[in-house]
Length: 135
Image (cartoon, rainbow, N blue to C red; front, side, top):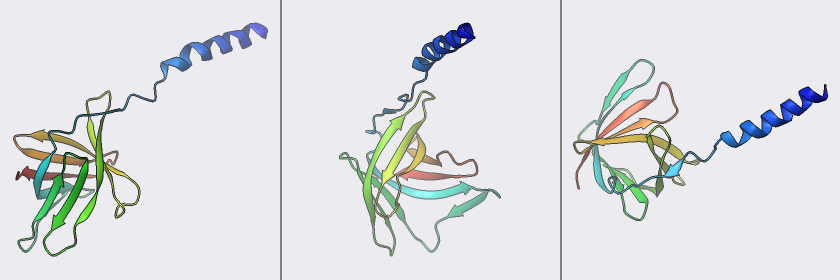
């Protein structure tokens, strides 16, 4: 019995340091800085495609000081701060902090050919949101 207990203790000490919780690191956000205009979103359970209605324009602005604001035609602006993290799978995630959101929310993102693609993070039936760079 003592041998089993000893082996169990050794196993715990050997395997515990291998578990890292700090694989997430703050990532560079310089390629996000600027103004992005929403084009459309697609996804959900029944795969919907959503486009702007009635000439509405939604602009997402990322500032170098890690603040952001969103403006949409005829609505008050939404403001807050953001930070970007990366993990061991090369996924970059934008975390938005705003009084309007409540808890911080995250969107995985990629940028290709001046197009920003935000993907609802950690949601299996989420949406992808497509933006084009304006400034």
